Image (cartoon, rainbow, N blue to C red; front, side, top):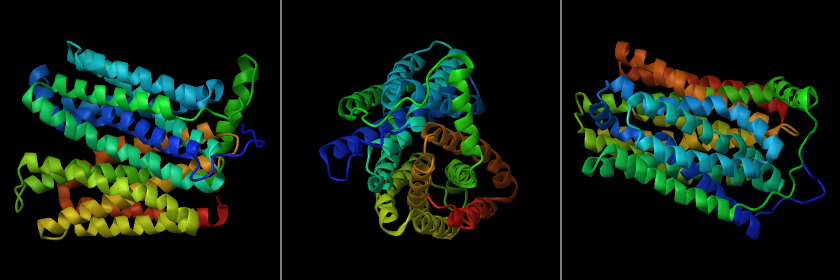
Length: 404
């Protein structure tokens, strides 16, 4: 629940600026840890004596744990407060990351990565609810954009910091370095995040008296057509985005490009496009409305996808940069919108949004590989593009009449 008697932090206020810094740090702490093994899976495979697919589970275990935990974390945020739950989440995750880096067996690494991902779920599950409640209504879209910008920086740092350290030392040292970086970001988050002023625990009691209202809020969220469309957009856009990054490396290392694996690793620098576009999308949404900006971002994402099937390598890379920036712009709008429209159930709405988001990453990011193997890159782009078009059609057909 929200204490309407206290105003939210306005744009430009010291507390608002502190919140932006805190949310960027939270995004870095979360997503640097989540994806840090991705650039050194070959080293993990050799050291632990497992195949490539098994090594890849070090990433999938964490993202799977996160997807499973976002809704429970939303209930925890209702019980103890958004900020307190986020502090617990990021503290537990950084501790588990350090332990996982030095676990002696493959099986124990997977278990710890699963738990680490479950702990990390508290950040995306609650960040949008926290900012939606604590900032002025006009500032929500901008603040959401800054949080997403932090996630892009974290996703990039987790890969580019771990890989060279792993090459020089071991993958364990690479993961440890990222965990320490995340710990520093987590500490900055704890020190800068403004204390909650407007959050009021929505219900009290024990047993059914405590859980029935929460279940009712979850059900109410699932009955909202606008929320369901935002969840569908999260599933389709994130799934397609991850699929492109999963299989672009195979495309670029094959003929006619034959780019080296080391150079392919630099394609993650395209994430910087999302760092710029996310806060910009928030500002544009404040001026022009969420739906027009989100639809425009989807259109630009399609343009970037089309450029990746052009012949020249430079155009392929430009297309990747454009697609990445547009994806994160659309995601920042959709994720902030899900929290903003869920009066009285913000934690549940953001939890369900992230459940859809990471489910898309797991399901579509993996299954689109069958299309690539059977029909090649143009067909892969066509499938991902069809998902973007479907998301845009759903948003235009439902959200135009649902309001925000």
